[in-house]
Image (cartoon, rainbow, N blue to C red):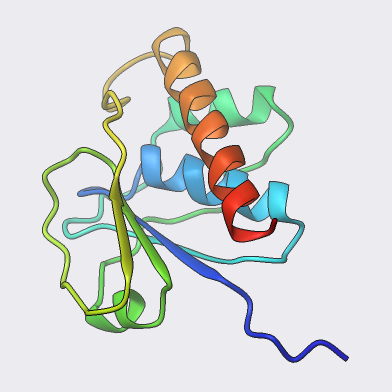
Length: 135
């Protein structure tokens, strides 16, 4: 039995309503549960961006039940990789963690046509992250 700890990734964006939710949904789906996935924001929105939900549904991923969550120090402490989404979000820094910032356009207030290229960019980044985490 494999007792190795699953790698864990935290996606952070201010509102936790678009980019970080899409990234978390892709990593969850593409890793088949082999990676522990969290997402959060420093100022969570009321709900997930409907255009992001629609764009993900087109790719076969249902995010409709997701709700934005507040970023906690514990979430950062418990994650191996912390990825911010180019939103200038401040994140507690812990030694020994891997931090990355993905410069992504903000899908807030945009229609599904504008969200599709952001979704595709996120998917490509998640796929390469997954290749590093689970060689």
